[in-house]
Length: 106
Length: 123
Image (tube, rainbow over all chains, first blue to last red; front, top):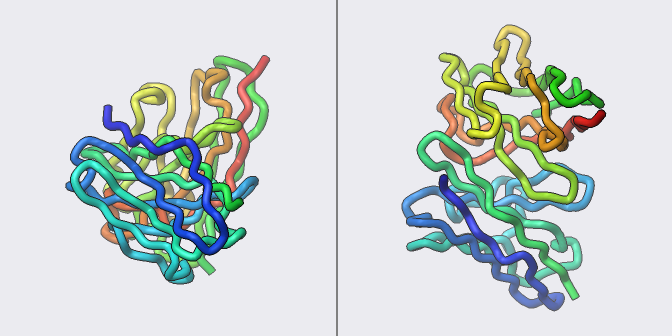
């Protein structure tokens, strides 16, 4: 079965850029999406189709996808961005979520 | 306002059954594929099942095939998940989620999520 692997944790200082990777076989040939989930809340879509932002998502969230790796970047990270982040892709007949990354803003 | 509201969760014994519902509002329900996604306590997101918008095509992760059945009633704008032969490993918050694209088929991302309903399988 298809798997997506993320680093368990990423730390970032306020105002700096946080980068979260998502690795999967030939992931660049699929659409990658990213979700933000804060404690006790439902996930929120922040990036879809590799690099598109839904309405209401700040411009500091950006995405890319090439080869075997998709990347979510949060520029000018704010305290409110502290959350768990999950990548996701569609593989033939299944949705697959990444293992998740906890972003801590120090 | 576009909204999804799940219900039907609760405590059930191993081997038991439960049916979850997800009431949709604020959009043309029959135009969108819908899914159930679960999250075990302290764990990550796991996709469970999906159903196309109008022709009834269904998709499921291997661990629930033969036990869970996804369905929808477009006249009632409601998504369902019938869960049978429940196991302790099925304990999770279950979310319903809408496919982003209105093609009616699953292939992209989830743009709308419900608040979730908790299912606990324990004796």
